[in-house]
Image (tube, helix red, strand yellow):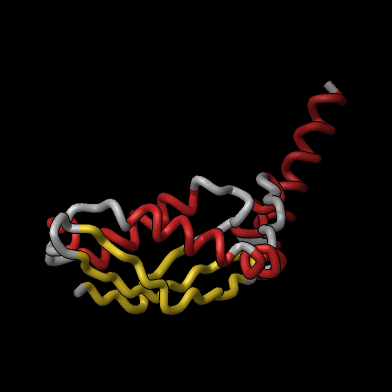
Length: 144
């Protein structure tokens, strides 16, 4: 009987104390939920820098005649990887030339061909995980 009484008294004391802390705003639901579900600290966002690839001239063979595509591309990569991307600019230009020089004319006559080129470049550069290119923007595209 004494155990029941002690348990009842402790439970009542804890409830009254908790209610008092809650009423005086010393204890709130956000604090309680953070105690019950501790969250891991969020990782620091990686600083992305822009690497520009300018004046890439792509010859496009259309049978009897040849057209040209002039591109300026901005690639976003983590800051720690920018040196490697700068070293690889010639290889990236070569990939762009090889990829787009074999496309048909209808590819470039699409109303939204800049978006199509941008998406194709992003997909192509994603195949090279060492580049760590996060986003690709076509800043200039001229087709003649």
